[in-house]
Image (cartoon, rainbow, N blue to C red; front, side, top):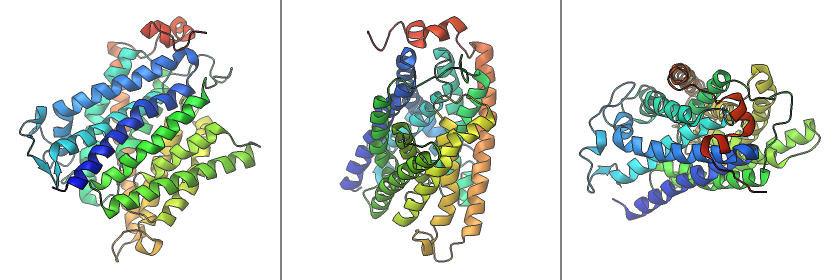
Length: 402
């Protein structure tokens, strides 16, 4: 056990918590209308609390114990057999458990941006439990645990392109369809109430993402250093790419565009962070920024969906772009860390299979989970409550008094 590795991983775990609360909460909260600000904060905050507890009860065991093809075992249910002396690799097992709990929590919290401002709080929590159990845990096992289908297939996913971003993006897209469009969508402006808070949230996401990506090296290593610099460069490149496209096609660059571009870059570099070189990370960011502009604009119009905060357009699309490009830029002759006999064609094929499996798995689980929740508690708040705002009708509070 290396104390430097332990210190870095504890720090990385805290950084990922910073991504969720307050980072993601404020990013989404600022994008909501003021009457729904607290409902968004509440959903993210409580989902984080819920999933970290479920992770310890059974999530960690199903994701990382056992060597099943699709799911782990219950050998470590309630953290059975884990002690202060237990190791996971060269780390105390408690550190690895805590670190991975934050990944599960942020993945579930990402989804709420798609159906924000109109879904019942009870429905959000019930869906989260079902989706975490039947989509997140199998995907985490398949990609990151020995014996898992995609792990054994050689899929490259350093910090969660498939497990986190595509997985959540598909769940969000299906949720946006099934919950339905917000009242007034397409007829009146549903403008963000505080882009200031959205920028603060995006900045906290960027800072926290160093724990997410560089922490996935599982130690204070040269691999962590590579992931760290790539997280700076891809994000910066995607920000520049997004606002350039805006300036060219919408006449002016926007703060929301810069923040969205940064998140798109962070998403795209997530699967690649420890596998590509810095120049590859820059190119990935430039490509992802431009494609995700289309994801939240043209593609969203084609799909005719009210994905309120563009969960699919940024996380789904950015995750797919990142997963594919990881198979390209991991090549050693492009600066990546792949072996001397690395084949771009065969790796991109493996990446594509992992993307398709993630889309199908998350899609089926999400569809069934939303339908079950609709039967049990109903998905959507009544129309009068939606018009009044979820802050007062669901939580009896208001974000602002003016």
